[in-house]
Image (cartoon, rainbow, N blue to C red; front, side, top):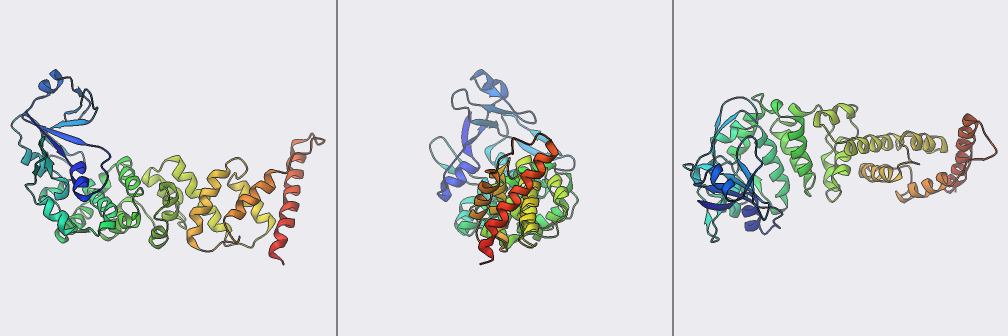
Length: 355
């Protein structure tokens, strides 16, 4: 039985990038042998095990054969006869098909080290086109490694276009698509992920989006993922459809909706009534932090009715400080009086724009 470190851990070590998790492949072993050594099986589709002490993932070496459509349309062979080279052959990119043995020696049968030197994202074999998820993965790696000037090798780019036109992209689950998108949004150059998908014809198969705000997204490169998502889809009339297409989590969905409300507000006249309308629509009083994050997202589109984003915090403090008149007992009258008092406070504050 031989054990090798594989995938991202080897790649990132060679690139000088911090390694966050390690994956291992086991050659010449059976499920029983690993279980007897105390490993715990967790994989459903193929044998993946947790190490009894480190809890890192160990997978039996395997081969794949296309047997159906989509990302899950594969049959697997995993037994002690599968070699390391056969296991590495099934991987997407050469830079992800490098292994390291227990003595630190590198095994690189498909030229991954040379591609790292040449800063190329190149498919391992023609079997690349069998899995539509690889289009999204390569786009994500192009995004992640943009800061090192990596580029997609031309024949790999053509394979991505071929997959995108085959109808298999549409078979990917919303969950898998979102997983890749969210990972891409954790990198500095998220715009590369979306522009690559657009260039190979995959993006239009995933979502119907008219405005892809790549220039604004590039400016927001250091922001957190939910803010980036709001920047990406802002200005599109079908926000709900886009969020559903990606199965975006509630936090991302709500922030994008509030951000778009602020974008619409910035197209109007600055008035106490418009400020109060926005505050009520976006639930500013109860959820101020969400609102302030949405303000940051909308700021990447340039136009703002207020001179700076901190003014929204001043406005929040102003309108939230106005208390209910305890002498009024009728609920509707309370709401009316509270609204009127807040309008007066806003009118007084906005006089700074009249001077």
